[in-house]
View 1 (cartoon, rainbow, N blue to C red):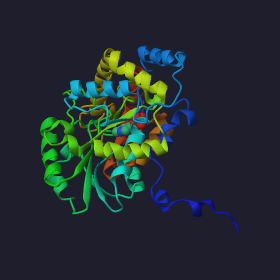
View 2: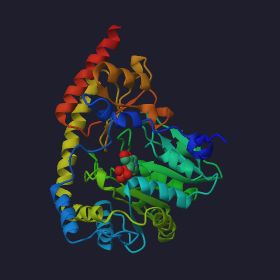
View 3: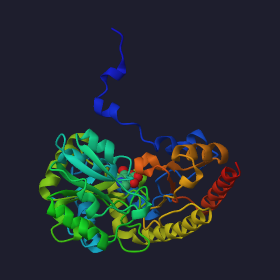
View 4: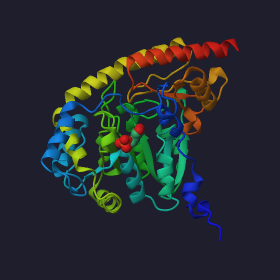
Length: 392
Ligand SMILES: Cc1ncc(COP(=O)(O)O)c(C=O)c1O
């Protein structure tokens, strides 16, 4: 018999495309001379105090598995931090699991919650892993398109239209990847009411919670009656510049945490110990560094937004994260054509908006987690590219 490996793949995997970010993610390997705004990753190295804590933990021989839910001191520190920063209170003993990045958190939370054909509402454009992970968990994904008119925000009224008797959960990601949009307390409140009225759960990805520039982050879990209905996904990758350490966490009701923990134990056993000690130090003494990086992103946001507007590209001002999501519809190019040509002609990498769902078509995602010098040079090149398009 001829061996055809494709015949052995699961239909679920075959059904979804590879991440549209993939190509632009590795651009530096393929095109080292490119200026890349493609990566959703801080350009800062992990703050020194955190790295020192990791080295110390190694010197002390902390090289083993940890408790599956994570090092208790870290869980305690996460609980204290969430209470103090966002007014949400979790018991470190049975309401928090430390995960292998926010990525694992998304996957295992979905797998613990979804039955085949349960519907999950995901506002779009959205982070690339939500839909594939939901589909792998067996969910029917119901996407809600958003655009510039609504500031890329969903409302309870809009969500009502997508509700069916099978709706189980709603994804919220504020501040958002890819749009940078941060929902205010006033905007989240009616959504919380919608969730309670229809007896739903919220999976609230708050991984950019610290990186807000106009107003303090609001967690939907902080509203009355919402803590038990919310599964918070978060982590250290972004605000603490710890992408390579792979430390995230989930906070939820003990019954939900218990179910998620079962999967976590089977698939990864625990998050890496060294990373957990670095993260612990981050919560103890990394606040100054987080504030310094946040200030720098804020400075870059102002620069990037004003440059896009000066180039004639409409943009919703991002309230958080480190992404700008300008509209390129005026150019007449599709998102992919725009990105391909910008890369070929000016050696600048950005990500096509449709990588984040159909409603991202006509937009590009530009990460400003890169130096001011690179931003200046890359946006200069983009302006030359746009001028060239107008002349053609
Ligand atoms: C919205 C969002 N959630 C989760 C993640 C996963 O982060 P990590 O697995 O690095 O903690 C990312 C990474 O880009 C993200 O943008």
